[in-house]
Length: 315
Length: 315
Image (cartoon, one colour):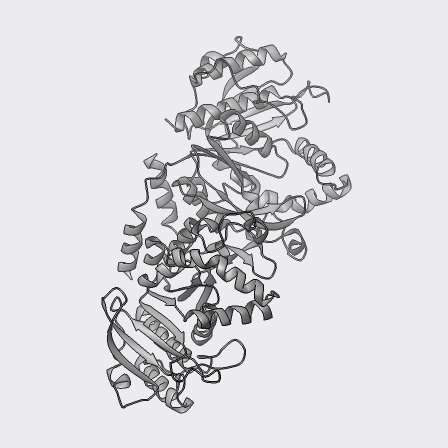
């Protein structure tokens, strides 16, 4: 049937050349901060140039159906990962997709929705970096790796307040998911260009102190030159350290201190923003915004770094 | 970003070679007999080797939303035709799709379902032959073109019995749809390899007489040699006539007479079945079956001819 393949190729070739979007993939466990990170980026870039999608919409079963399954929503078999890969490929080549929709409020799968590619596509979810094919669709990849007590706190906060569960049920669910977190979610860490770890810093981990972040910058992509900004003694808010990854490979680690005064972080943000060379007066206000009205300067700096990479990839 | 394209191609290339299905496209207006034709073919081939899908699932709006629109479900803008084309291409290249689902009973769009390619895919609906790209995905194409009083009768029958409307409402809907039938549905007729017209034959059009069918066989595909079967005087059930299409182009027309005795039709069916060379004793019983327990020998002969083409295309 090669004649049919040729006919299809010829017929498809008549459509105008599609614009190929820059794609960012954000992976991480449940309540690791993926949506918050993505939302700030979409707002900063502007929804007219940027679209985001969540790969958890590719759940194969609804909440009711999952009750009888021997695995949780974290398991690859609980998701249409082949379709997710297909849609990522289509979007990466500038084509629209009809994306499935999972309603977290009801736990049900509903009517799909059209996602049209744009200049930038931000993809976040549990398993976007699971396969080599999915990873190949991204220009930049991030893994969110908050320390476990922090993530558990975030999950309880969100699921009791936003989704109506009680805390004991959330903790039980976390325990039930733990083996699959370990088997499928955390292994994505080693495929990310940047690993972001929010955690309190020892000695400064009183409840009122904003969290710090540690950004592992792998040499898999070209990071901005942070030498001037992050060398010791210039800004208290950040410092850069040559380090070894858990597997022994060389990496840079950017420490972003949540406990410094906001002014010190803002100076760093300005310096990074200037390095992007965007024709705007300063870093967008929406960066660093937390869901519940708070702010995190380490989050803002993480988002700025990602903006830098997105802008670079679009050039 | 050519490096990303290359990475995607390389990563995708690791998957096993997909089997490319033979695809049949059946277009026609509402209640033209598409589902009945398709169902007999799926049953004859066997659901383990054949999958069918309806392109009406690609409706962009549900029934409620369509109320406010200046067009009916027949209009291309009322459907995700770009996504339909994309899914047909994916299936034609042996890849699965997550197909949207439109529930005719409730008029609502619901959760999508996985369609995996098989040896044969039968696609039926209002607009599967609308675009050149969609048509390129099919090995054989059919347009169902019953005479209008027959179709109106079928539509009233189905929608009053099966979907709970009253006859006056169905007729009003048919009138409302007429301009779009003319603009978008009927033009697909000229792109079909076979046009099937069920209609009573003048002089034999008493209500009790089974409908006859006229099959326009365009030389766009190689039809089986019907000379021996359909030459005058051999079988009363069929005859073949060299004809001109409405646009003046040469065609064969196979007249299949519904008014002859069943035995005469069965003899023709056996002869066509033998020409397919399938290792079975006779034509499958399911061919010619009408939804409401009746039988139509002209339908059986139409389905046999299509089976011939599907088997040929798979060789």
